[in-house]
Length: 111
Image (cartoon, rainbow, N blue to C red; front, side, top):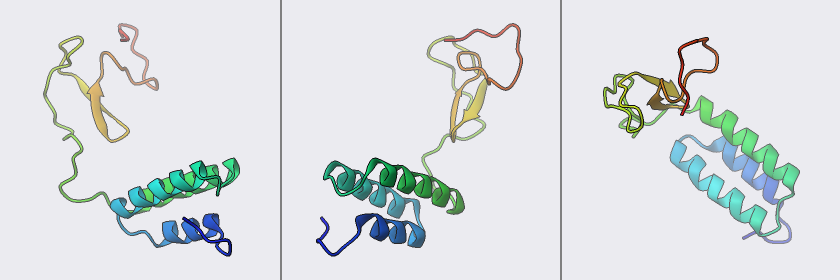
């Protein structure tokens, strides 16, 4: 994947900085994985690149027509049947089975 003259971490770092879409970041993540599995990146280099990808992703607008679930999702939970939902990491989850750990709810049930 990389020639002897190339520094894969520097090259990937530059690509991350130039990424303007989530799709390009996804492709870079595949290349990061391949470089690490191929022995071209250290564990520290891998961690550094992953942190940079995460930081960069926060600065890129979410694509229009995204596959994320609407915040007004009213579907029922397959486990408990509740329609109470909350957002967690960009997806909607059952608020009863997976309560928000930052909110105190004495009557809470956990899955």
